[in-house]
Image 1 (tube, rainbow, N blue to C red):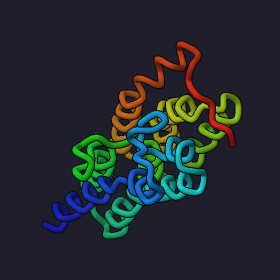
Image 2 (image 1 turned 45 degrees about the vertical axis):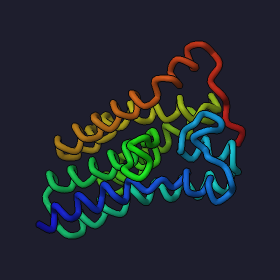
Image 3 (image 1 turned 120 degrees about the vertical axis):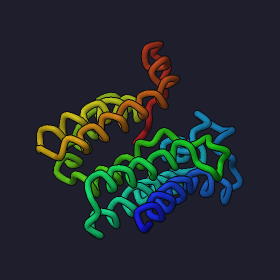
Length: 193
């Protein structure tokens, strides 16, 4: 029963549209500006870097909090993986935005920090390296997501968590379809740090 409540909590927390709310407070509907995404990079571009950073932190927290609680309540790896997936799907398909959410990168970061801190350090390093070279958040996100299952495997996390990281990575790639087309075409926007 408590696990079911945690799944609902994780989904609803994941559904909170941090970027949309911060944009609205500034008088901007981020879904109608820039890339149209509610994530931190678009919020930083169209609203401001401070709001972008706040979006990043909020979206990371949406993944971190329910998974952290599940781990520290001593629930099984299976329940914890389902809680993580619920939070992630809440971000991608939020009930509060008619199931039109973000791409999941920051929420995945929060999930990975709770589940696999050692692997996450490596994933963040890969992300930072790619963004430092390319200045493309989308490319860095795609490479880091693709690297996640390898990092989970390398640090010998349970097989279920490796599969979870693979599923999350695949969903991130799917959500970045338009970005991939723009990267291939050479027109993907670069982020000024």
